[in-house]
Image 1 (spheres, rainbow, N blue to C red):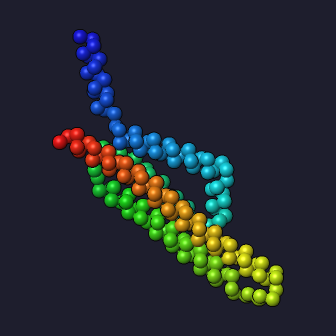
Image 2: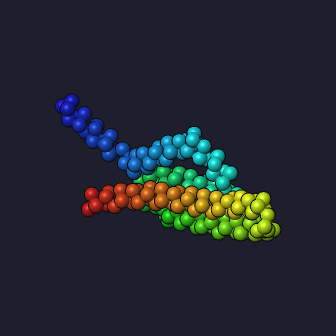
Length: 171
């Protein structure tokens, strides 16, 4: 009799476990670990100085919002229209990265050729340094946009596949 009660209790606990939230939590802990690692080795500070437009930090903020929203809908254990906004946020991250790329190239081209004198070595060195600032903005925003978008899409694919597996079990 005690065995039957214990098995029944374990089944209830197993049914109460939110697998969707657990999968999201594992991903989020991995992302948090990678973020702390990036902070500790100085990548966040390097990104701050590399991106003159600071679009990378807008992308990172959007990533944090979409990750939290994914966790919320994982907790709710059901399909919701919020998932459409998360997919939109993922695409917006790529778009913001491309906007940063264009802005970086504009910074590069605008500052590099304004007072260019090919006869003066010092002037050429200054022009190359100015071009490097624009190029670092272009590349850093592209990288951050792509990485954040891929991580958001991975979260959503895992969640939606989990929903599909639940639907298949119910039928």
